[in-house]
Length: 326
Image (tube, rainbow, N blue to C red; front, side, top):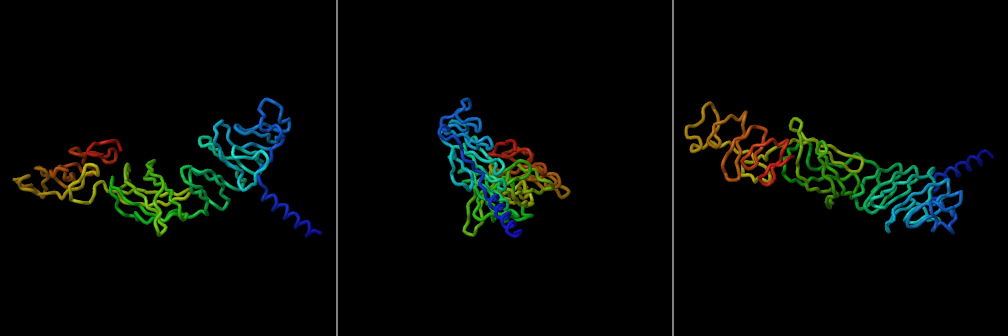
């Protein structure tokens, strides 16, 4: 007898765990025309909705769209349609589910209380307690998957030197197979996000230009975020490209080879100093840059050159030969 009672308790508990939060509307003969002021729904229910209306029992709540727009999309997750439930809204039990609404997009969903809502551009889904939502409202489809340790970054590798204002193709293997949505944070609030290109090996490629960073001791923290998990890679920061070629103003100046030219400095330079643009200088204080016209110019160390102007690379950037705030 005790065993039978125990089995019955287990079955009842399992049934409760699977119970849908959807609640059927009442007084359906008047629900489509009810208002908040008339008593068509009676004292045991309340009129809810906009384009379509329904009488929800007082023991329930309503989830759906309140605007008078002709579009609304939503559902009670993993539940069959019941009376009063359509894409514009539904009655539900707050003890069994929770409501999430995006009023700007006119989308909604009711998820069981053990689930969390997961947004996307095509609508909401619900992630179970063992899953993580890896998408935001800009993603094509909602993606739920088991949590992981974050993206496996292929490029750049830790300790690699990246050049400011130079375009790269970052590559990583996503934590969720096939997920191309990404968010890169370069310290502070400097971010890049969107959808990358899925490669045949399962990795994702992202075009990225390193801008507006404030390196600490020459090191940048690059955080690759995917959903609620992320991987941080520490890379070295280079203000100028490690090249001696002439530089375009759009990509910043490159460090020149500190030329010693007799026609620039016909009398030479004493004490081991070098010559740049007709001036002798110490490499401990200045850097010699090659400008677009092939001439040479001195700038204090740890600065860049834009056109003919030296500038603080932490505060400004060079765009087509013109300085702008970083």
